[in-house]
Picture 1 (tube, rainbow, N blue to C red):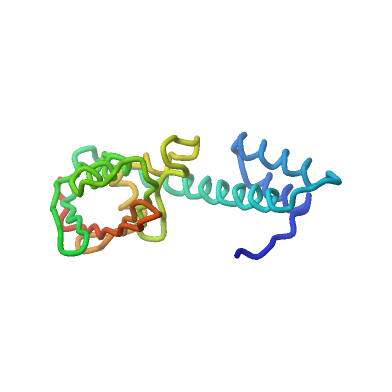
Picture 2: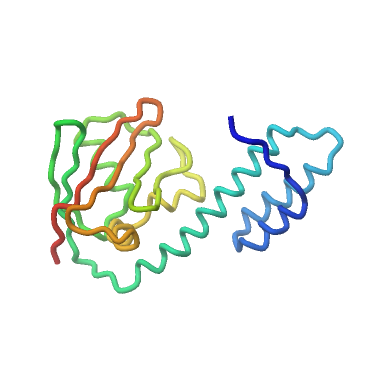
Length: 182
């Protein structure tokens, strides 16, 4: 169980200063009101606070990652070897494709049931949707370009990417960058 966080108006104000996002600011305003009520629900306040922290972290990553798009060429191709256990396939993947597209490719080729949560771990960054079966406004991290994610993570030929599919079954894949072509 996660450690309980003391939620104060001061902490919330500090978080509000760290974000430009209107939705996050709205969540902070709501939580500020909630913590003042006599009939507080500490459990939900903790969930809301952690959600706000997660959104701010993702917003900061989005700002960092947006710089990775500068100077990218549309014609870069990555040869990716995608493996699950002993089963492996190599694909020529256009760098301008989105991570959501790569997830769909893996689902199709490995005959996985669609509509499950997934996550790419590329260097120190994690990419994936916030919710299965529908997209929240913060699901932009699975719509990020493959070449930009690889560039920002500093990966090169021979490096690996982790891919986790269906958090209930935890189906793990390794994606190796076999080659880069222009």
